[in-house]
Length: 456
Image 1: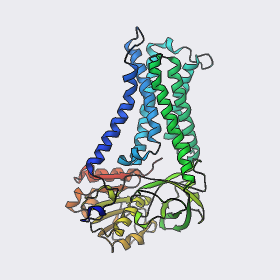
Image 2: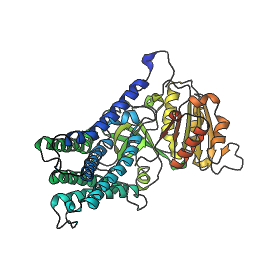
Image 3: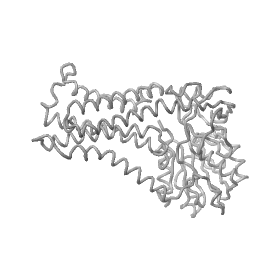
Image 4: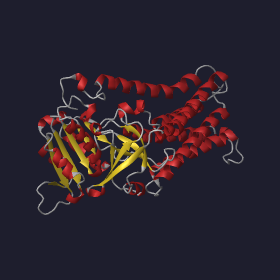
C-alpha cells in the first residue's frame, strides 16, 4: 500500500493488527466451543449406570470425532468471515490435517470398544449386525476412503473433477451415517433434552450444505463473466482476461485468488482456484494467469474469447494490503508462483508506492521466465530490485544460478530488510528451503508469509 498521510486514502482492506488478532481469537474460541459443546451437554445429567472409564472415554472420542467432521464442512465451505483473517489456503491446509485427526479418533473409538467392550460391537458382518452398528462402520469406511483418495489422488491418477465429486459424496454419506449411528445406539443421547443437540448439529450441517452447493452456485449464475482475451507468455503461461456481465468483484485485494469455472455451470464441480494476477486498480476486468500442469489446466489455456465463465471470490490474505506499515518488501517466487506477487507489484505500481521491493524469481532457464519484460518495465516505475535465479543459465549469464539459499539471500538483502514482510510463493520444496534460509539469516518467523502453491 502506498504510504500516504491521508488515512482515508488507505485501502479499505487495511485493518489494524488489534482487530486482526481479535478475529483470530474469536474464531478459534468459536471452534473450540463448538467441539466442546457435545461434552458439556452429553456428560451433564444422567449417564449410563455402571459405565467403565474405557467405555466413557470411547464414547467421548466418538462424539469428538463427529464434532470434528461437522467442522470440516465449515472449513471447506469458503465462508469469507472464516477465511478472511487466516487466508483460505491456511484454512484448507488446517482442514487437511484436522481430517486425519478426526479419522484417527474414529479408529481409536472403535479400537477401544473392540479391545475392552467387544460384545457391544455385536457381529462385524454388516448383513447380520444391527443397523445402527453397521451405520457407524459405513461412516468410518467413508471417512477412511475419503482421506486415502485425497492423499493419493495424484498417485492413482484420479481426475480432479472425479475426485471432487467422490469427496463430496463420501463426506455426505459418512456424516449422515455417523449421526444415525449416534442416535441409533442411544448411549448418552436417549434423553429428549439431549437429542436436540444432534438435531441442531444435523440442521446446521444441512443448512451449510444447501448454502455451499445450491444457494451460492445459483448466485454465481446471476453474475456471469466473459473471456475477452487469451494472451500467451513465456513458460507456457496463458493469461485469461475476463469482463463482468453482471456485478464486478467486490472487496478485491492484490494477491488474492478466486475459484474459476469456464464453460460449465457453477453447479458442476469443475472450478479451480487461480490467483488474480492483475491489480484491483486495473479492474473491473480480472486476469487469471494459468500454467498447464494437468488435463484441466491444459484445456483452460485453450479457452477462446467469448466463453462464459463464473468466478467465486475473492479469497486469500497474501497481499501487501495486510501490512500497510511495512518499510519495504522481500518477494520470492518460483515459476508460476509469480502470479500473486505480480498482482501485488501491479498494485504498488498503480499507487506509485515509493517503498523498496526486492524480488527473487527462480526459473528453470531464461526462456521459461514468464512476464520477464513486464517485470523489467516495473523496475523503472517503482523501487524494484529484480534478481533472476536460473537452474540452467545460458553461457553468457552473469546473474544468480542454482537454488536460492542463505548465501544468495545474504548477498542481496540489506540488514534493514530483516523486519520487512517476506512473501514467498512457489513449489513446496523451494518454499520450505527458503523459509529455513531466511530464519538462519535472522528473519523473524512472523515476517515470513507464504502462499500454498497447491490448494487442492
